[in-house]
Figure (cartoon, rainbow, N blue to C red):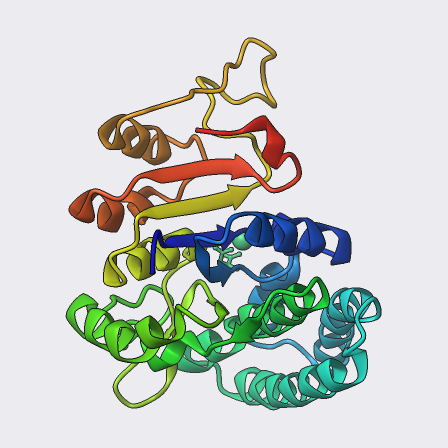
Length: 288
Ligand code: ASP
Ligand code: MG
């Protein structure tokens, strides 16, 4: 096996079929991309957050689940595997509905995390099929098999030693034959309950996977063409930064540059893994 890149696609990058297709081509164009961690399709996690709050009545629950279903069906309708995929999604949504009902009766943080995990569970299944639709052997993998955490629901802490052992055992052998598509943001505690790593946690998941697999590169694909000196939405004086040290980037993340999750870089720093940040909409523009 030559180079290994772990690629992460954020919510806007997997928002619809066109966006997912662009990401699939990014994977296809660089064969070092062997592990892909995806966020939930844009908007889905926010809907799930609402669903996970106490006192959501049955009508609103149904309405939210319907909205989520539409977001995902708008993608699956473009795929040859639409029927099978929709069956899987229906099954997940039925499970989601029962968690939502339980939560509305007796809210707890454990069920909230179960609810929040469904966005990534769906987007990762769909993205694997989008890869297949362009001839890449994309395969779904449930990250909860390797991403073991404590039970601090909503902000779970990953057991990196266990993650590393699990990745070597379960993911490393798959690298040669497939592109493994898995979830950012979610994990599992030692009682097999689903956990989440905190909002925006997919970047961190990807960095942890890169560290655990000794990856050569971590690619964070988002909706901006790299890290800017200032927020490009606020001023047209903003300049894309070609290269930035870990320390400076972490500082910018902490101070609200909002491109990278503050903790994202820690695993990459520990392991000295170069991190690329670019736009999945305009990959040809390069990035940081
Ligand atoms: N889907 C999760 C969120 O929106 C995780 C992520 O996108 O990084 O917070
Ligand atoms: Mg997101």
